[in-house]
Length: 151
Image (tube, rainbow, N blue to C red):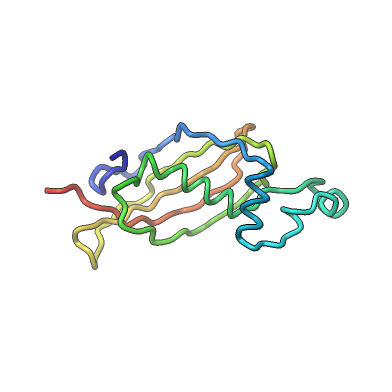
């Protein structure tokens, strides 16, 4: 299993995830409609041409967040996580557009023992997404409840 156990993480450890993702119009429209989000910014090209500073639809930020965290799983927590405890400080400094290619990076920010579950530890990750111009488009902190190494 590729995920790391609690004891295998180190504060400051950086993962440059090898998976990149070009975001398509289909990704955006499917995700937006599947989540019942009626925002014109994601669905109405003519509205965006006439009424937004972008002049075109922008990608649903929840999709960007989901892909950013999802890509990180294989290198960090696949098979070794007990639970996702939360996402904090979610930010989208620049919009993502159809056709943008995203790359992702994760950093271990904090490690701590679980007070209520001695068989587990908590890892705080900082996830970052960049577009093809190396512009930061999304960030978040994620708290994961992780398995300890088997004895």
